[in-house]
Length: 183
Image (cartoon, rainbow, N blue to C red; front, side, top):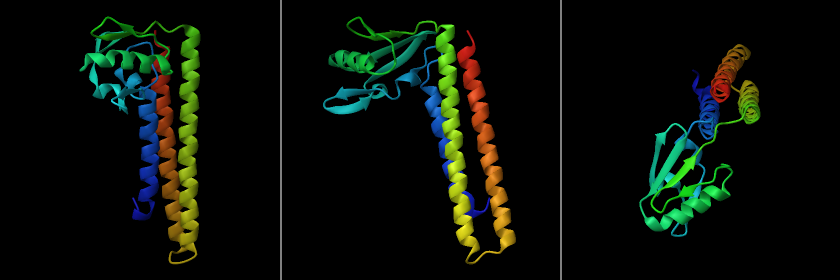
């Protein structure tokens, strides 16, 4: 990989990794602790991730259990989950909070697959925008110190990189869609 293209590959890789972590927060009928990643709890005036204020476990396939390290955080965690877009009502028994994930309906599964495809499309657009920025950079480079042939080779390398990441995003989308549609 040419050093001049490295920054564009890094950006494409970050786009892919962001999409991958974003997919982790989409619940697919099974309890996945990553659905809590975006939720913050008011911990002494500081918004703090749930994983940093308690122990998050998955005792059963469709249950997440949160055991806060401080009892007074139960209400705060409960409030944070209720105000989030998770769509699950927490049950608080005085020492732990349980989130019971209902089975997804066929309609809800299809909606989630649409959301997954939309996010994949946004990722692909971001990768293409990075390619465009790279091509603009190469055009400027061509006006100064680099031969036309070298620019052509760099553009081809950039296109191959773009194709690779778009293919990877499509594969990621297929895996997540299949996971959601599997009952």
